Length: 579
Image (cartoon, rainbow, N blue to C red; front, side, top):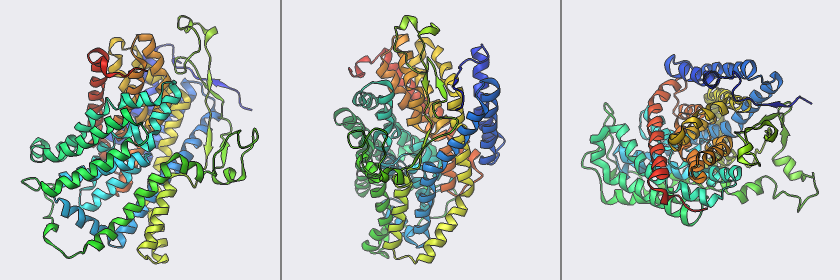
């Protein structure tokens, strides 16, 4: 058995030097990707090599554990992340090759030929619904492909989908980030959801306007502001009301549906005075004046996306997920240590050799069950062994639900089996380098987590004193940018946020929630999301260009969320619910 290793967070005995060393792999990744414009897989490889070197030479992580960590991250990159993307692109390719996507364009064109309204409907409203049902990069993959198919330039299709995938993320995947944050901090999920529902609606009002300004400038916003208000306002109202009076699980699904319906109905009675399109784009056909396609054909064209929505929603339900994993588990049904055959078949699990419970996290990253006055004394410290368990949940993975939607689509549209197989093969060839990149990016993220460099970076923000509520959002932002997941960021920094809040005298509920609501602003720049967007819009090799497109949007939105949290800490304390 490998020897246990306890993480250190200041290996150079100087917080500035240790932070600089911890940041080196991330800086190298961003520099090679955004400045040198390397291909994404090469930039990811350079960042991974740097992370391994820093973890081994500076932090002292055992080489065997490092190798296991890198392989563990690559496997997670393939399932569930890569599996989602490849099947989403497969479904999209089927609709394009059969001509059905042209009819989807007709229906959206009939609703509005204005690109601004199309972006609101697809990137924000539909994206929020998909985020609530599935998460894990699914809305970026689907919405960017949809926008490009509608005629958006590839850069804007990817960039707008990434920017829109912010405000809904904290409640994504049936509330998984909120539920996870509650589990690691022992703060009730309902209260965390309520607090998030008193922060994110402000951003939900801003993001639709942000999308329009990004596309068409402030003048463009003036021409379409009523639709922006309907889109963001309807979602924000549901986001607040549902999170505060019902619960965190279905916030995005209900809010997304309401927002889609509101924009669609509003577009029937109101249209902007001027139809905006990208400069230099060819004239759009006025679908409102043609009856070439009957209603039945339009409905038929939308069925694949209905199949997709139903599949990802079902696959996201806890009960369905448990069923697909072989039924409920627990000592009440089975003897201690037993796993029924269905579980072993449908979700085989492996403790990662040389890594599982080998790495230990220490205070202040993990909470201590002792008097706060004694936390600095080594004798009172406790460590937490980090699990490393890979679950091959091939049936309950969201990507499998998307694959089922694609196969149902093939049957519904009566696509010949030979064409389905040819499309599948073409999709695999199309996605081979994006999949490699995703695996390398996840390896990098896992090495930073198990090596402890992420904690060093997070701890650097805790020395900001009275400004900590502002920078608490940046810790979450950093976590999502590193891991690609608001859920993972909450696992990573949730307890740290709670401990720091208690030491500095802030309400832990406010600060802990800021980790998630601030973290969502980092979703658009995490390497995983960027690779997903490039793959969906067929821009492989342009990852650096997309990163530059969205980076300052991410920074600005994170700063706005930081200001909201600061105001709630010092001015509007009544907005923090009791718990």
